[in-house]
Image 1: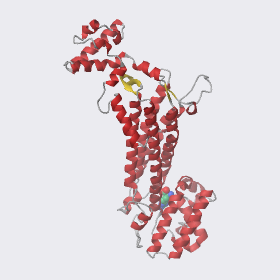
Image 2 (image 1 turned 45 degrees about the vertical axis):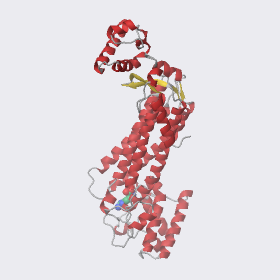
Image 3 (image 1 turned 180 degrees about the horizontal axis):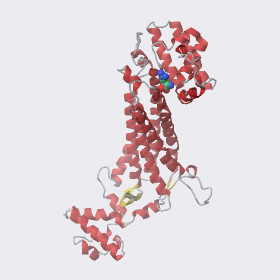
Image 4 (image 1 turned 135 degrees about the vertical axis):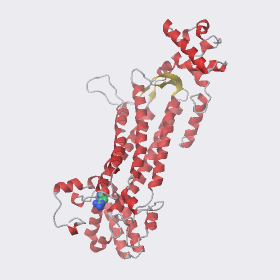
Length: 458
Ligand code: ARG
């Protein structure tokens, strides 16, 4: 019989049991559920609510249940709904009345809120660790190629010459903020809801601060109704993951473009690609494509949780059981991406000559010309216009900017000096960029030094 069976005379229909169960997905919370119960009974005994020997037996038995679950020696049955009831039933099956004391002053509503927070603490730590590894791989690749020049793009059009390292380090910045957002949401969710009961706290003299301390929480939730009703901590976490997903998806798109024939900037290692069943020549960047695809799950999970919570009356409603499906999926997806991406970056090869060739497009230096004119005292808008006219002239004559003589340049840029026709060397252009955060050799070297130190890279 179900643990809540007292007021029921009829049996749950099989379809309903299958419809309402959550054991198929919340079983992954077992460790945290057991840790919560151990803390709870320890507090109950300290407060004289249950005898010390009962607490002792319960703790011992919970330890055995943990071992059984980890050995795969634990039977799951949908008639017991969820992980909380499975563990409580297993306890009662062995200890009888002693085991039946474990749920004093507790509801599954506060229990599940505790379990998920404990689970997320570990998950967030793992994800942040994974993000740091991802950053390290990017920094290593940037450091291996500190002077590699490539075209930078805006609107996916050649914009200005940049350093490849600068491009990779842009993602390192993004991932740093992602890790920061995760750490920040952990700070807010690391408070204990235990003792909130179903909605209203308890008439028993619970010591909530004590269980919070035993479980490593930073404090206790202040309002029992808030504690069992809200899932904003999951929403925050999913929004942090959704943003991380957008970043990884954009990186994936960059890499997909770069290994395509039109760009030909990089080659991904065979271990991270697959072929086509039909076209013998194909080597597809599947890891990047699947990352781009899988990150949709984060946005989906975030949308699911927002939609689920919108319009829910306080406090707990069974709808909230559905929170775990997208939450777990998002966390698993993040871990999968973090497992494949760093080694793919580490083994990625640059096609330096090809990048350089693309970066030697003289049009990339048009802005440098305009800035040189500013240096000569020409107002920027005038300079911009003159260089624009020069580009137009080139298009009409079918010439490239670096094929013009000084005389031709002076047709649209009267101020042009003899250095102007030689200003199309991308390397010289990069060397002139000293502004903090810019793509010059010096600022990029300081970025690299900063991240190496920050990420403990030699
Ligand atoms: N399995 C439930 C969940 O995941 C646990 C809480 C159930 N509470 C209840 N009163 N039915 O949300």
